[in-house]
Length: 111
Image (cartoon, rainbow, N blue to C red):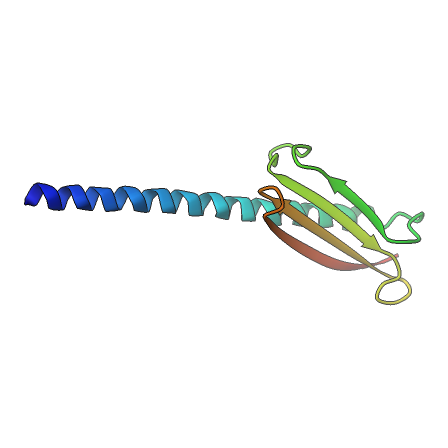
């Protein structure tokens, strides 16, 4: 009887380990996605809005193109003079797991 109890306890722990590991992987991907979005927004803040941007501008870095983030895709969208003249909206959306998940960050910049 004691052997059965030990076996069931070990079986339950093994199942919990798989769930915990899967959760960490999802958490790591989410953390990486937010970091990628923050890094791109910092690039935009540092470099500024290109003067040639007169309409909505979109740049996508596809899956596999970013070092250390092959499971992520990052899209930068700049909307000039939105929500008002002289103010530009920059949004970075990061997707992962073949578009199953996404997160985005937005900031507003002046000329």
